[in-house]
Image (tube, rainbow, N blue to C red; front, top):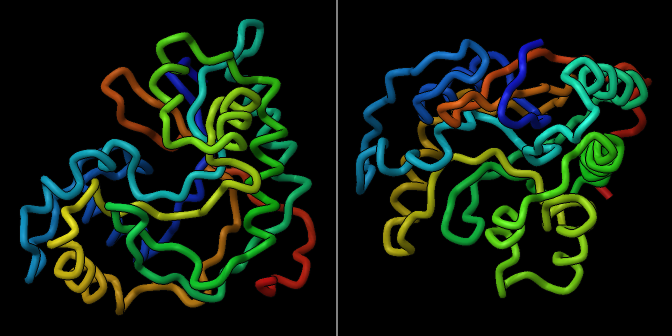
Length: 236
């Protein structure tokens, strides 16, 4: 495994759902190739503008936010750690996804809180934290905004990102920030586009280890199947 600028662990969908998401964003992080974006009816602005910020990540839900490897760690040790976590974790089945606005951007999120999903993300965040390089002064300054709560600021110091553990909210990002006046039209257009292929349930069967290239785009490096017996995947 070659070195990359940063690494991360995503949930990357598969099948028709992934194909539609990759095409919408214009970047296929699995194939490592640009995609022609669809011309969706009803959009109040070009798809290229709506996806400019999230495009480089590809269609995904973050489980462990991007990080640099600590001194003394290697891509091989990271791979071994992700493989070990996957072997101990069970697949997650989310009964339903809904398209919603998270602040100013649109994303798919679980329709109801889902404890097994949150527990999976927490296991990955805590399990990989020893491999993470500390934030640089500029990285810390960028993330330490006045909007952070004391709890989020503490998580930033411990894990390099404020929205993890009890502050985590799983989402499959679809847009950059959208003006409030345009959100309803964008949501309606995207809902119609994804409705025929939206999986019910949406299953997370593996961990996708990703690498960030020099141009900022993320690439799938390897999938690690979640191997533990599945518990009762009921929302709670």
